Image 1 (cartoon, helix red, strand yellow):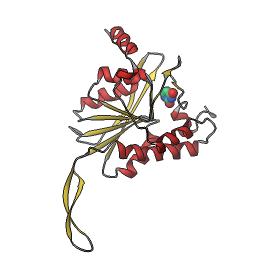
Image 2 (cartoon, rainbow, N blue to C red):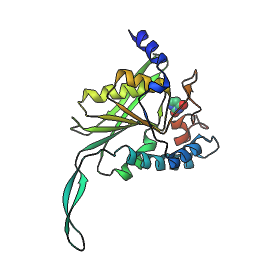
Image 3 (cartoon, protein in one colour):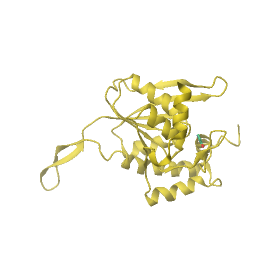
Image 4 (cartoon, rainbow, N blue to C red):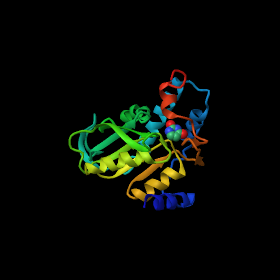
Length: 226
Ligand code: URA
């Protein structure tokens, strides 16, 4: 069964993938900065945070609002305010890089964390941490993971969140590989994927090409010291 699904996913044409690419020139410019292997971790972190602010804005266009009473210096008026709870969940560790930018734009959101990695020895995803606010039933989720590669960890995170009866999940990424998008489209057709760029492919080691390398290492400067 799993092999059948994997074959179908591999055959999915790029034009059939359901993914929202955000081709705003400012986002594209900042993405080019991230791709450059010579920028420092400090600059990388800063640019990821800036991009996350822009993504927060784009990915919440359809949040519900309702009129609220406001008194301006001149008169009373009705003015819209956000009227639905929003939960942001960061996938550790690279999702942390996007969290600050998101929280700056969406300070009313609550925050969850999920730690999942793909263990190459047992060839499975392993969850090592999960912390969500108390009542998340039916809540709309922005799930943060800058790199959607094979889709294994994203699928494991989505599956876990769904166990809590959450509402609509929107996966927010900086880069996405066709394989990862196809996998989520197939297994979780209700999950929307937002990315800055749909990339060409994954290499044999699971890195996105052309990509930006390991986002976690570049954010936290762990390449030189590990
Ligand atoms: N995760 C990353 O950080 N980079 C990739 O290219 C793929 C997965």
